[in-house]
Length: 223
Image 1 (spheres, rainbow, N blue to C red):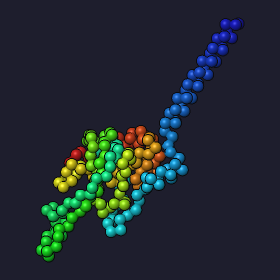
Image 2 (image 1 turned 90 degrees about the vertical axis):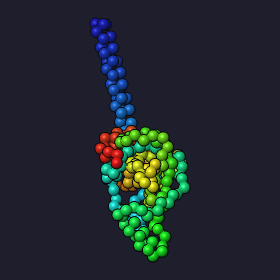
Image 3 (image 1 turned 60 degrees about the horizontal axis):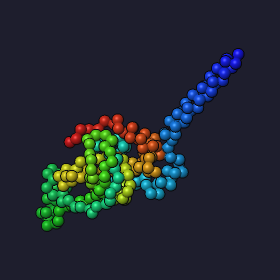
Image 4 (image 1 turned 45 degrees about the vertical axis):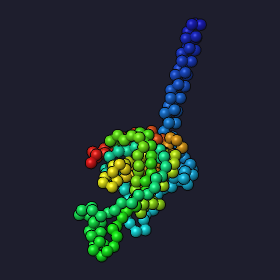
């Protein structure tokens, strides 16, 4: 009778231990996917604003993150090293483009050629999440005409962004846009640079969840 009672006691203790371990495992699994609170996201928007505005002159079609990845070759995580001086390119000599035709007319009228100014940032690639591998320090650029509605990257910021290699005057640089960019906030979470249907799902989620989500996106081959 004593042996039976001890056996029952040990059996009960064993069941309780298993249930405790199992509950802790489930708790940890759930905790790993808990996102930032709405209040915290609102606070972070002071430093990481949602860039949903439009340019006063140029109209740009609003794109989703998935739209951007159809035109890019790589998705990376990166840390901002700092902003670099703007650079200017001459739009002359680009055959069969509206800019070249305009420049030809300007030249005939004794006017200077059209130019475009670009903002650029040096970033350190932390990881290639998807697409063609990119390593080391690279330069991310966008047309300065859109400054104020494209990300103003600060030293030390970390981002996840879709990039595309520049050509001709932009050789060695990479284009990026707010539509394909997420900030890494509070070390382990993500916050979009623009608000859209995808960001409703992903804002405030753990970085790992976001990377798992975008690592399966099919990217076009390098051009």
